[in-house]
Image (cartoon, rainbow, N blue to C red; front, side, top):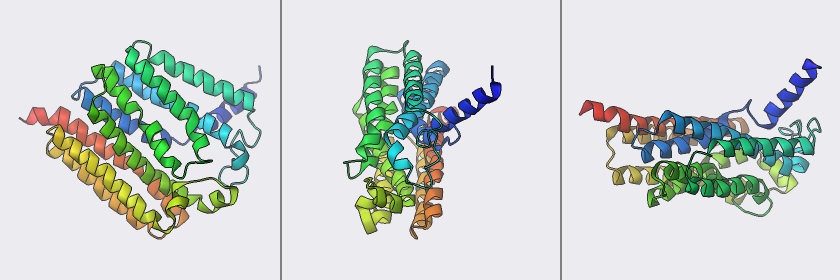
Length: 294
């Protein structure tokens, strides 16, 4: 058995699944954790938490494989993506599809103990993950579709905890859509010239010279919805402190993207991890620390 060859192949699979670039997992995970903690009033149970954490990693990895399969003809024309394992031919199409299937089946096994409603929502989540890469061919703002796909852990979390999906969950999903349009537009601003050349549609191209304003507007919408949700839930200073920190980070992003420099836009995109983390920290503190201070 050639262990060096096996290691090389595993390294290629890791790159194909983007495990070497965890920002996508984190952007998918934070809204899921928001919902899980809110739905359970801060007590989701560690088994349920691990099911959603591992499921997020698996489905994000599967989504990356499908994305590279869908974009393999485009990626070879973009400097940043031309060496990806699938488009460079280092991993075959058959291998990639098999890997995506295995990852999806593993995620399905994780939710076996959960309710029928979670399973029904999971089928929708799989459809969203598989279909998203193809929306870049015809949808003017595919980032909005991405926001639905990245946020579908929200209704699933509520279904897992409460066995129904309240209106609040769909509002949180709407906030995630706005947030995703903001951060993925920052990402699209990095590849604007390449996307024009190869004919992919992105929000950065659709917004045109109003791209920076659109990003900040979307941040504002997302944070406003989250603040409104906090008032409906009668949350206090810890929660709104998290919202305030997230708002400050969003304003900092304006200083990064206003010049439309590629690397500063990419830095802003990566920095969105801290927006998600700040909101989650506020939720955890509100639900788990505030009661101890009463």
